[in-house]
Image 1 (tube, rainbow, N blue to C red):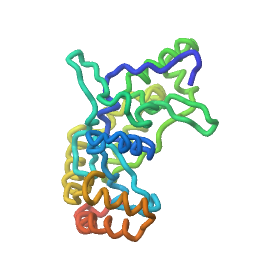
Image 2 (tube, rainbow, N blue to C red):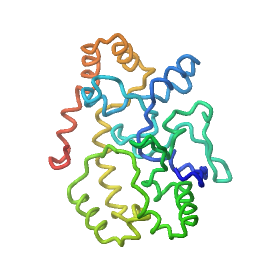
Image 3 (cartoon, rainbow, N blue to C red):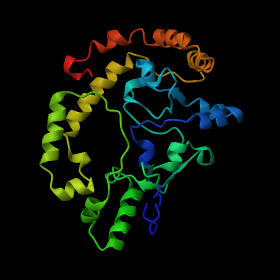
Image 4 (cartoon, helix red, strand yellow):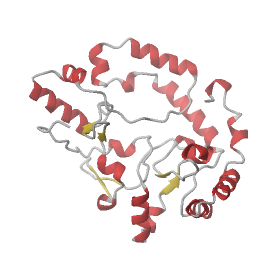
Length: 261
């Protein structure tokens, strides 16, 4: 991070209504359990990808805040702790208890051990854009010129399978962009036809809804998985997860073949 410039949150709330994983680390969960915060724990669910492929995390439960996930069949995304005020500004209902992933946003610690503001947030995070605009002014450059000189810092995302024709449309649109458009990252809303994108994701959500993958950790199944893993009973974890996802294989067969992956 530029020592001359600090990141300032604009309280637009856009990051709290984004379709990404709000993963919780063990220390946050332990703190909420110790403080008996059932009001917070109710909104914690097992990551649907853990239920579908628990072997990827060596059967360690991955926990996230239920802010809506397409693998749950959800079409809307909003953190349950987000408060929107009449002024248009937003705030966090659990500001003093918020997870580390939220406290650190949009910073990323890279291989050199230093903190950097992520460069993949310019299309929607007002605070990130303001930060880099101020950095650019100090450097005496335009935003586009400055961004070309800044090392790329972004999160490693997990994609949702989409049809090849949609992927081809995205690639074609990206290749037509100017260097400045690519550098500023302000083109994502224009990459694909909104109606077509809505149709694709509505179709996927309808299919994923059949899997019933939303498992709260306060539920019987959720608690059983956490207890089994705490006792290092991996076979028990496999057994419980297997029951939850028994219908998953049949449901996924309804996806067009080229979307699987």
